[in-house]
Figure: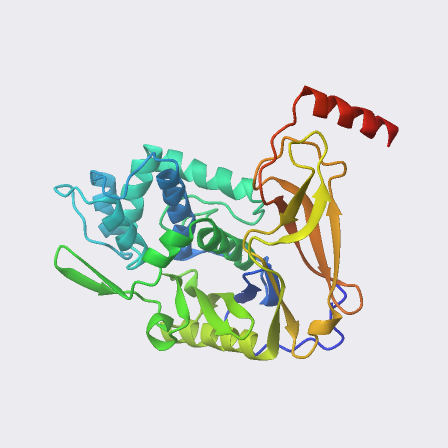
Length: 370
């Protein structure tokens, strides 16, 4: 693939089987190695488990203060030798407590209890996980369980895991802020520390998830947000198959620091502000703004910010009714030589209702003439 830059910064040596560094604002990949190789995701699996629980909360199928029973199956997770929240069948923990137990201390038992609470059975919940992975186009991901234990066919890749993690951050910012920065959690008088060492080392790191099995090695997805002169900037690193807890932390820190120092961020469009304003046909409004709700931030090698090129492809004609958030175009961002950097979907920023009969008829005539 042709590089978008004449001299792209060279990433540091990363002691891991696979890694990826992503600019959150544009999903631009700044560095990668073996990012599409299928590997065991270990407890990084719980990112998808959490996303589905958050989605159930958003749809009011579940409440944070709601209590859930602890099944024998959830209790028996202690036999598998993995991380635990230490719940048993005599307890009825709240969904909020189970989320803290699954995210902060990676409790396999909490993951099973939540899966049963949302899906009815673990098997039905796993099917939900795989349907969501397919909907997102994650071709290297297949789930066999909700906690990440080693099982034939249970696999993902650094790129797929980065995209799952970004869905958690972007789709549920309030839950991300609540749960993923927890440094420890105490339940039933048992206190456990979050195994993400970067939460205690780098104040800009506010998540995200660790994983370990003998087959997967030591894994970490880390997310940091730093204040820069042109606004906040989030980077997300994925490190798979490191040799130790210390190594996964230090290699992740190395990637994040490189991303912030070797690359500049360029804010192309502010959150909620239109990238373009276009005519609307058959609508109560004559025009509408198209943009990206979270804004668009891209990374460029130091000093290369003035060489960006953007093009917009959009639906034309744009006919009402239009729903806020409806995708109707694509913003393509290219580097100095025209090579693609990334692309983001353009959404309708404000709903446009259909016009009355006369307005629709008049615009139909105008469109026919056009």
